[in-house]
Image 1 (cartoon, rainbow, N blue to C red):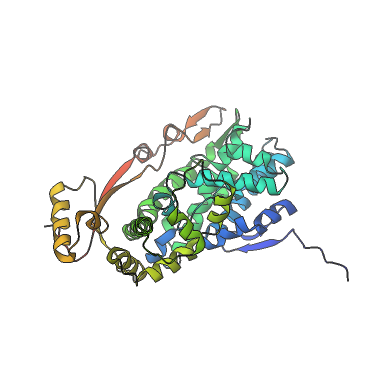
Image 2: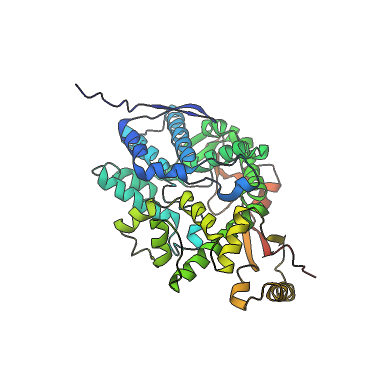
Length: 412
């Protein structure tokens, strides 16, 4: 009986954009690879579903959406006379498809706990190079563009800039799944206004209002969704749980965990040590490992591990107090003393239940400007081209300080 060939020109039904076509067999095979399929098990928004119950979409959704928008952007630029070869189109599509492949379980939580000193961007490059070996060098150009080493700058800017394809998808997608209408940007309109001038990605002048809305939407989404206090405290508690698990493992205290999670709890991994074997183990680590582990850790004999794990699973989170100024040493001391009294903990353990940190957001970075192409053919920074006074304010970083502590404790 003859083997039937797989149809590699599939279509995917996306709730945001409708039908998305997979453009060629190579991209189909990359999507089918276990490294990419892993993204189905990495949530796009971490613990945001504790605030917005619909926010259960994954990095897989986002990556496929980005590939679709990149295809649109290439078509628009070609209609405006920008020459883009088929090889460049394929490479930039692969680069955006794989831009988040290095994200760990619960996205940023792993970067601050058990896989220290290695960013998800660095791990993405390692995944891409491994895939390149698997596909016999067919990802060479995609990697060069992703790393900003290709001579055509605008192709890199489509992947990473102040107004890139990544942001156009995640703002619209996250707005849809959270139900937060303020983030619902017009990605189609913004892409239709894209152009290239002097090898730079720019926006035609008539798209200026769409850019203004994009920047304001980004600011609102950060404070209303990405840095929402409940998601913020949950992610920080997860970081504390994983750090405690790693600390106990170092003391040879038995910790139940999957093979992949156990490996990273038992070993200190640096960037230079992150070889193909470590990459393979990392590829087996996803949200399911973490959730399964903290469900088990609720019954662990260690008070800190069991208490924090139970609080996360039951959504009985620490209280979080956010303000513009740093919390005073007196406030922190009051909380810590109450904790010591209530739970009979020493200073080291108290730090797991009472801690401070800072979050920062800058909606627009004027050092990497979004450039508007005027009708006269000149380029202007969006802040100067816009008559919106508040765009200037969006270029200033906003810092907020927070203090987390158990709800039973009182600041004063």
